[in-house]
Amino acid sequence: MGENQYSLVVVSNRLPVTFERDSAGVLTPVISPGGLVAAVAPALRGKNAAWVGWDGTFDGSENSLDVDGIALFPVALSQTLVEKHYEGFSNSTLWPLLHDIGAQVDFEESWWSAYAEVNQRCADAVARVAAPHATVWIHDYQMMLVPSMVRSLRPDVTMGYFHHIPFPSPPQWNSLPHVSEVVTGLYGADVCGFQRHSDTENFLAAAQATPPASGLIIPKAKTYPISLDFADVSKAASSEVVKHKAKEFRKQWGSPTTVLLGVDRIDYTKGIPERLEAFESLLESGHISTEDVVFVQAGSPSRENVASYQALQTRLDSLVKRINEKFPSSQGRMPVVYWAKNLAREDMLALFVAADVMVVSPLRDGMNLVAKEFIACRGDNSGVLVLSTGAGAADHLTQAVLCEPGNPEALHDAILSALAMDGGEAHTRMAAMRDYLAVHDVAAWASDILGDLASLPSK
Image 1 (cartoon, rainbow, N blue to C red):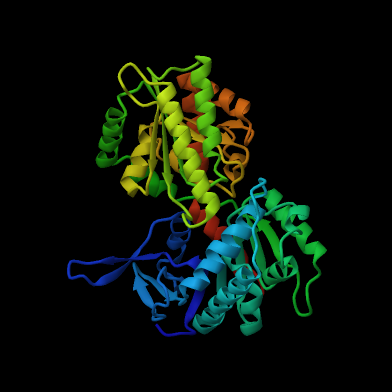
Image 2: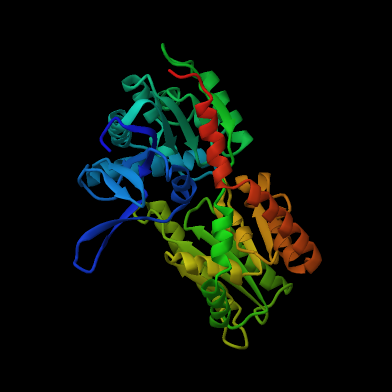
């Protein structure tokens, strides 16, 4: 299908694609895994839909691709543009500022220029591929200028923006360089969606402080908690391959009585050091012993060219080494198993099946789908979820053992409560969370947003 023909156009910083060499050495595009892909792709298949974004290559082709039934339109970017837009303004300025946990916020004017240029290139691509009166669905903080840019080019389209990460309080938001331009960028959208009610309220407060320019209005703001394909994850986790891997993992870890698990992208917002320090505190107190318990922390490397992430990796390496040297088991088993690598989907699911207690303790998180994935994998209703209230998931997974973010004592006590929980209570809590997610899945999330956009008057 040619340009100007797609009735639904998704826009994100990255296309859901990677390039792999086939047996003949030819680069072939394949759909890549990831939270956004898992959430959005099911809503596109079978529809007249296109996806616009960067394909992960430098100055690559802008020829369209058809991968697994999804039309992809790459936006070509140079390495310099990617570094300044993604590693610079997006992840050294916006990411720490939006999460508002005290992390250092860096800024360079050239980063802002690159951010605006990349957003404009994506907006231009949308304007080319969108059919008359199409619906455009823009995703996340790397694309916050796109709505108004598209609006100026294509006033006929209906537009939604979804913000996957936290939106900060007004004082924090107002410290953002070029804050008025960024919030004005969102005014092109008809609907702005957020993970939590507090994020929605913070956006509205920011909008009220920045009056719209001529021709623009403050968009409708609404909370749409993102979810996952519960049925698909639950089915995959029940496969014999995954169950066998889960058993093999526990043997590999020395067949402990209890497995605590953390699964995260290696990011300073996820509370990984604080989690490991809480585990260390439990060992020091004698409440648990390495003769019985292992903590498995899986972390996928992230933004490895950004200094703050390099410092986090160094800290984690040192912390794991310290705990393992201080608390060896009589069997020679390590108390902390640390995997800093990307895992295949079956391996990830096997981790969720193998664990007894999942510890999800971000300092601040838009949603945290890992918590939901763990629940989806517990087909026998076993297991306990420890969940920080810093995660959006805590708003509706209230049967988890909840604790305050960044509070070592609270996390220490929450893990102890999870370990001591009666099997019947654990079963009841898990069953309730599974029932909730079976209904409030990713299809319901996408349907809510796209349904609200479809109900708006045609332009």
